[in-house]
Length: 519
Image (spheres, rainbow, N blue to C red):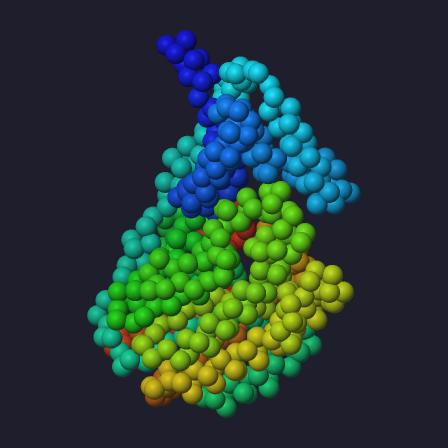
């Protein structure tokens, strides 16, 4: 048995594929509280196909399968590990492109040495196969422990928030639900940013919008906030399922992407268009008729790309999705362009969009020009935030006018924020995507900080008297309760408008009521 196993390990070069699994395993283990196992599959399969291609190209060049496999392992190691090793050892003292060029030269040099070798590479194949079979054991154990432990508490969204029933199909109005991430309310903009947003709000009111001027988010972060909006409930069922001590983000992510509102419109005769962000929970909607996004790489794949030599070079040269700032600027403009096109769609349409303005990174100015890192760094945080806000305001008014002009039946339009801006004391690195929201001890936040974080834009265009009698503190959790009751024959009624914060990253479902502190 041992001889057969040894012969197999000497003969069959599995090591380049095992290296891929090692890399993906390490990255997945560190992100288990935020990722589900199936979300890694497309990235792993892509890397496996790349390895197959490299081996196919190297086999005739190096003169043998095992030689080609060694070359493939070397190339994969270089692509995925070398930039990280250099940065860990030398910091930022060596330019990214320089380290990548030096690494590429080393790889080519080793391949040049391998090519004329007369060795059958059985010993090397054995060593690499064995080493890369043993290396992932720790990761495998960590995955098994987590998936059979904390992950077992995860409950299906349909069980926590069952499908809505008893609704009619309405009167054929288009419905637009547009989320502008971290768009603060007028008080926050005046108090913290010294900005008067009244001209914009009055322009919306002149077009028939109801502005809930004292609206406060129901939760302080996007995942919790939007999960409550689209499930039309507070998140107490998640607390019951996960307990007070959970640091597992996946349950709230699940209930954001698989929610009651999406399930209803996905099964209806509406055309359901979803426009997501780069962030996995809103990147795509499984119930949408069509997902429209720009370069929507899975977040796991994006993380690997950012670490890789190719990603480092692309970022340095401002190319493609690896250039996070340029990618984000292009995505923002793409969304507004696509939304304007959708306004002319004659079909009965339900549109959801998660638009990351004025959310950082600050990549666009008030005139819609993309900002490189140097230009953004030369401006203050306030200037950058307000630049994106003013760009959003102009784009919103143009879009609203287009929607209202094109609609055969007066549409329903919701312009809403999921959360307000981060207080400066708490903010992370706002120059690149995904680095702006550090772990925070929310219970230690001051009243002013919580008000900044949770007071939000909430503007509703509800034709036919749909806004009659609404309170000025209407909160987002009541959005679809209101729409379903007034346009789809529902009987949900409005919940009491309350605001909660989760305690910390270790207690994601332990909620404290802060309503009186933030109003």
